[in-house]
Length: 435
Image (cartoon, rainbow, N blue to C red; front, side):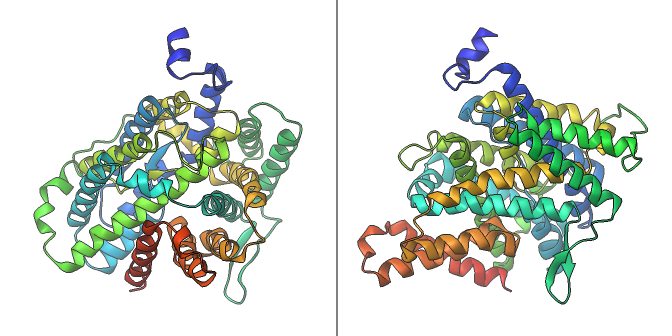
């Protein structure tokens, strides 16, 4: 145990194996929904749901454990929400591309990712982003995941007249989430250790006792076979032979790049890892994402990304890579104990997302709101994420405006040349996805 503590620098980070275990479990529970959501989304594209379930768990475990052991960060990685919908509904269903060809596009994008990461190009881009925009990214992610939590809880619903509105608070499932939110906030306010995780457990128990959550019919079940999807992307690389498919590959690259980069910046800021406006070991962290995306493309799942739900593990005290190792191990266990995950419904995870959103929003106070040339793009990032339901879209809006306002105020030389390049790339990106 002392060897583990030494390797992960637990004493230096003022943490312990117990704390890291709880953090890893909390992160896993917060993001376990992807094990069921991803097969449903990719299943709409004609992929075998059982195989996607297994591929999702394995890719998540490999990438997250790599993150923990090599990059030493408590950041979990799994197939990303949003990009999986782009894969299924835009590329396969919308463009009429076979899912095997679309998976080949993911594989090619993953290989490009590996090259960009190896030469530290991704790391350089992250480090040149201004501090105020990094703070905006962290805050925007907080609002984004809080919005997701409130929606999952049924407290915010779609409304054709006002776009969104308050949900039916008398709904039993909404009341369960409200119970979870109140309990978790009470525990947080009282500085209770592992408050978010305890809140989840109490909410699950309340759901079971009231009959809103059914007990699983089984405890252990064998993992579904990977055969229907394994290697399909590799074997169909030759199908990428048109400008349309090249555009698909580029879109996979851009969306995954900035979703991951933005999330990592936000989480590193929340945990206090940033030093001199730079993220130490950023290259290793990004390599974990590249490895996960490559493995996922080979065995049959959509692009991976750093998960904002890692913030729940960080919030309960996770500070080292051991948190990620535990999270990855839980993903492997999930292959055998998948029936137990049915207890952790969206009503159970919703309170955790809302609470973590509040914790991450504290970065707003550090943004220089007096300087409108900086405040305006920062605001677009913060408000853009929840309103576009996309981390990368929110970042795009702010990154496009930033060089414009800086030029307008005569500070052209204070903007790193790469920020101009990124602004142009984001303009092209938004034009592509608009079509």
